[in-house]
Length: 370
Image (cartoon, rainbow, N blue to C red):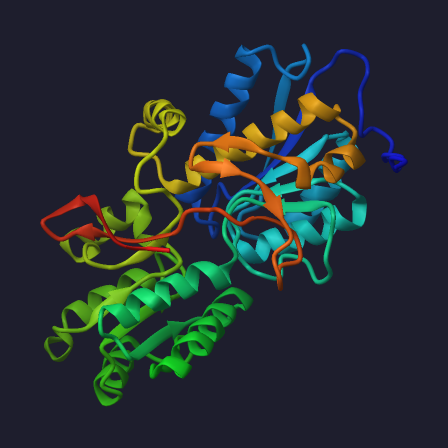
């Protein structure tokens, strides 16, 4: 098979560094703590690659751009990074932002390994240029729906903000829960006050409230309001998108941060590689690494493996997604085509539902695995 010609600047032969463009939310309104963890993983892996001799003797270099959760800013960053001659793109946490980056990467013929974004339709049409490590939203949120049913919740309210991501999540939950006897009640957070939310939960006899909203606003005020309403003492609050994963959640909410189940993408036990990387990430971050930090590490590890095998030619990198087979921090990574998913997908990503232990909010409890 002939290899398509790469765009100018896609491959360097002058002994200079091999560059990977990194898209990361590092300022508000981006989820800064998630961005910091993602970047820590990316940077750790780059350091280890270079300590081991780089990419066939050439150093690997990360060219970081802050997306600030802005799709237009991300698309412009992809254009800039493509002009700079990066071999591939890595990263991004926010799904709507990653979707904009993926569209530009596809249009420009620039390989993009997405670390953390889960929106099923990451691109409008199937693409050969984009691969993803995080599970698609449909898979993760169905695991979460299974957890809800198993815990006895059939009347589930979702406090949602307008967004493609939240709307997709609501649709996945409804499509999965309704045939199984569940009811999904939508609460529009662009129209309801905190008091009205509590009244709606009581009136609808909801036993669970899911936070399909931004962090810290309005997620934290909603939790505070519901926790303080004596009529809702028995309601379960959930956050499938993972807001309670990060230390800031516990700092802002204190004891109220616990007992709120969320999705994370870690195995029950880390492999020796995962354990070693966890130790290094903890040292780098000064706190326990989230699953997002592992996603960052695995992203660079995969790209480095591909670049060593096929060089920094963009087209060869994109052609190599289906041939990837390597150990990541959270399992064996291989990409395949998944029905309904437009990008090359790691189908084996571990999925857990966990919460912070009410008796010890810094400790996580695994409640369900899928």
